[in-house]
Length: 351
Image (cartoon, rainbow, N blue to C red; front, side):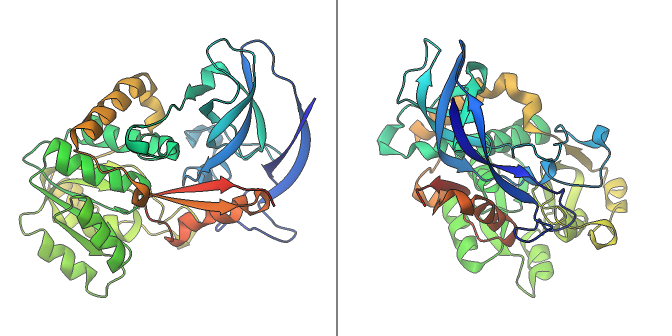
């Protein structure tokens, strides 16, 4: 019988998740998980993917039928996609010692069915296999689906990408400029250093939303208005973007991190809603899980574009943070302070 430590939900989060004290959102437990049976793998987690969507799993105040992921019962393990090493395999296709991408949750060890594992073979050019969690993982899939399936972006489009220094935004910028070939790509990020980095990825210009002149800078950068807005944040930036949309513009509603930790009246809404009517704007939300049957083909395309030199994938596109298992929730919380550049990954190390 295998024992593992894992983080579970202790109390649903109302507002910002709490890391310590009697109202802590998470609780560290040790439990037995049994042994793998036929068709299963026992894996040891090496790297955790840190994703804003985890906030939805642990939230309070929404009717279950309004959630796009099943509501977690208190005491349930926190879901998470990870890069893990196979310890014991009861599956012919997977060998002990192999690296796999798997849904382990915030757990040191996990037993996972073969259907929820994919191989993570070495990448060309000595790239770290951690990119399977970011630039060649769900963030890249999300960027691709948003641009191609939702926005139907073309070379004639002017596009703005918010959270452009994040995991999904940084891939959306690259795909828009170097693969779709959009005529102008404008990023939005939170520091001058991040803005320069986003421009290095291919953006024609990147604007600092923390600048006191941001609203004016946005107007100046979009004199011909915007055909596609790839929205990862919602809130005030979405409201500022609506008057900058061209007629028949498309807004890709990918995320709303500006409001994830706000409740009720504290949430930031839209004052410029009528611009959607006035400019005949189409605003469409999506979740990448709905496109799972296309994942294999999309990943093949991404690797082909990488081989052609159209995608820049290197150590600057991810931030790998060494952490003990006790520090897993704290590292995840960095997402909500804007402290990461590219994909935020937790590298588990012994305490």
